[in-house]
Length: 471
Image (cartoon, rainbow, N blue to C red):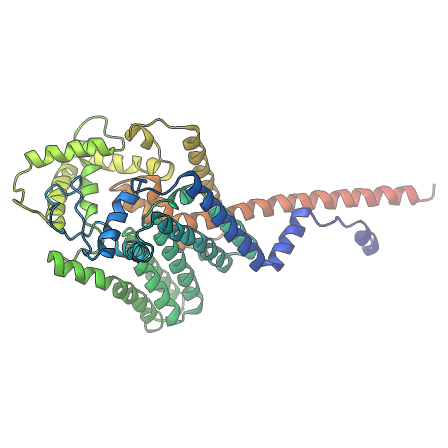
């Protein structure tokens, strides 16, 4: 077919192609619009669900922040978790990670303990994650995937649910996304500064949600394997790639060190993460000793079980028992049960994938019924997960750290405890991969559309050519 005919009959640019071109040319404006969308959605959540001292996660975090703000120190006494803590004296605690606690302590001190102000800080964190998601996705893929991912996070319901609550989840999500951004840059540039900034972000993520420690460790191990494999193929030697990775690990350790030192001084034990880990290990795994163990343990059942344990456990410390001592009891009892029923424990751990990703049967465990909205969230999670796998399949070499972070987080929670809110800190990474999957599907659709249009152009040209031919 002559070139003039091709030019005359070439298909017009599709509307979505024109939109993509405009968005790529106006990234800053589009990103600002999405951040505004996130804030608008978050404000809507605050209006419809006003922050209160009893709002889901708030009772577990806010009182500690208030104690810090009021000069009583990093203290708390939650008898549901630690029955022998002192309710009359200040009981040092390591239940909750320090970055969110200290952040909201500052908010409380500056705003006369306003929960609304605390929710607005959570809102700012949510909007900041929109920006972090954009930059990470653009670093890995392209501006359009980045804007789609940022838009998905802006209206992601489980994240918006966190806005009126005081917790460490959005802080952890921001730090993990930022840490991953600098890690991706470090893998490409090899610059020590990028590795150090990434390590610092991951350290702050651990101090926001302790599950990030396993993620950081898995990433460090994965990078060592990647570099060692490259070295066997003739890549840089150990002397070239080891120092930046050591710097990454040292930066994480440096960020965590004040918390570890404080806990050593207070409890005479270097608590790396949270003293609630052993409690949750016992609470959510004691059920393997009975039939019908594939389920979530609600708060009422947990309180009954802790009371029973306190009445039957041997070698129980006497008097006022601190959190570390009580954690040792929980851990001892939990490990005894797990060792007695290892197959059941493995089955329960595998089952916990469902409540972790979909809140499966969580409502029933807490005395509620699964609603239509719960079903919508389950469908959304399933869609995001399927799209993420699609995106990962086409970008494994560059995006494996995101997949490893998600897998490490899932595995860590599945062996102990599972609720959907625990997966929220890594959902920005899942959403980025989901946006990449959407881009892959859209690209395949456009390719088929282009082929079909090319066939139509050829058919039109041939028809016109036949009509113009002399008879």
